[in-house]
Image 1: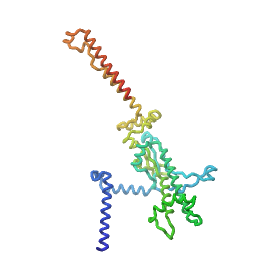
Image 2 (image 1 turned 90 degrees about the horizontal axis):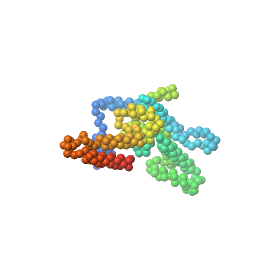
Image 3 (image 1 turned 60 degrees about the vertical axis):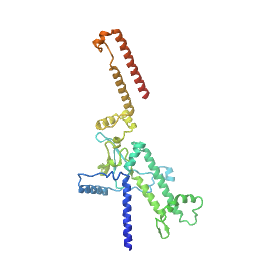
Image 4 (image 1 turned 180 degrees about the vertical axis):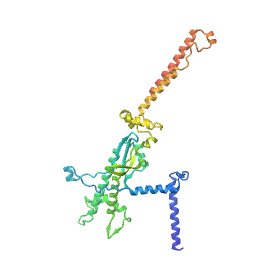
Length: 362
């Protein structure tokens, strides 16, 4: 067997392995029962043109440049002596209210290097942890993550500088703690990062990767209560300059798929009835509950009580008019009156028991 034959066998084995891996991944999404979304009625050229337009739009967007490490801007005497705490410089969200678009609209400037959470993660955070309008905890987590990455990058730089001082033994206290925190990266990347001119570049590459990751945190955008895919490209006049923006407006899709958080509905009902009125009027054709749970439960309880009362009042109570002439001829009115009292007492007892049972359930 020649070398070409061996290479051909290896190539076929690699292709077969990739095919098996892709089938296993597709099985997680329901393959082969789920063949995927079919595109019908759209010519292939139109799809290619749409992809080309999106690619051209992305290529035409500007890059957002944020200096890393962050520029020191001391504002107090203490910060001037000890330095400032590094902070994230996120993309600002411009929130606006409109009777046409809604009351929870916002837009951000569109850049080529901005990042969003995946749709599934954003949905999970909003539905499970109620990160809908108040995203303070997410922003605090982003700040903490940025500080951790920045601090670790500084330790890596210190470890690199320490390796140049041959008079310092890094395996003595207190340097041993620094070595324990940093050198595991060198062991993990051993055999991957090459050594050039006898110099180990692991620390330099780790510093570059940490810097890139920290810089990407500056460009991370939270789109709550919308999903990232709901953003619509548009243009807006910012600082007397027409710029590309992403607009998030109208009704968030998660408020249609899942119940709107009760805290938001209570806020509308108690403090912003204008928003409640707008939602009920604009989306009256959708099966969405805009009233708070307490108001709906009280309304249902009242209707239930009224229905029970009407039902018992309309219950057949025998009177002189309800008896046939044959019964009236054979029975005197005193016996009919006693029968009527007995049935009335029975129906009132049932009515009271219904009300007591419902009050206990409520």
